[in-house]
Image (cartoon, rainbow, N blue to C red):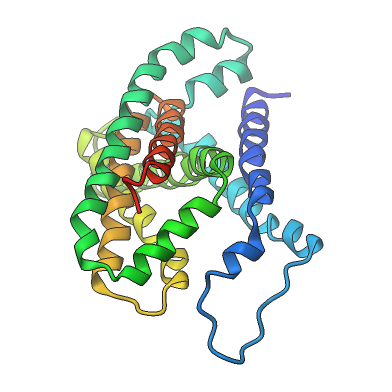
Length: 262
C-alpha cells in the first residue's frame, strides 16, 4: 500500500471517530429546544435515522481528505503526525513541536470566543442567551472535542484552507515556485469566515428571532478561532490546529459550567 493510501486511511479513521461521537448527542433534547410553529409535527429520530445522518459528513470528509492529500504537499502544508505514521517514521518527534503551540492556541482561541461573547451579550435577548446556554450544556464535551477538534479541522483546514492556498497561488501568484505568505493569509481569512458562517444554521435554528447581533456574534467568535487554527496549521501542522480546537472546547465547557459563558 502506498504512503498516500495509508495517510488517507489514517486521517479517515481519525475523522470517523469524530463522526461517531455525534451518536452521543441527545437529539430529542436538542429538538426540544427548536421553536417549531404551533401545530407543526415534531420529527421523530429513530436509531436508524440517527446512524444514516452520519453518512453525509463521512462523504464530505472523504472529499476534504483527498483535496488535502493531493494539494498539501504542493503548497507546503502538512499533517506531520499522520504523515509520520503513514511513512513508518517515529511519531513523537513529529508531535512534540506542535503540542505547546496547540495548547497556547486553544487558550487564545477560547479567550477570543469568550471576549466576543462578553461584547455581544448586551445585544442578545434573554431568550436567546437561555437557548444558547441550554444547547451548550446538552452537547457532550466528548462530541465537542472529537467532532470539533478532528472533523472541523480536517474539513476546514486540511481540505478547504489547503485548497484556497492552492487556488490563490495558481490564480494570482503562479510565477512564484511556492505560495508566498499572502496566499496563506488570504486562505486563512477566507476559510475562517466560512467556518464562522458555517455555524449559523444551528444557531439560527434554535432561536425564534434572528438578529444582526446574533449573526455577528456567531461569525465573529468562530472566525476569530478560525484565524488561530489556520495560523497553527500553516506554521506547525494540522495536529497543532486539532490540539488547539480540542483545548478551546475544553475552555468553553469549563466557562459554561462556571457561568462565565452563557
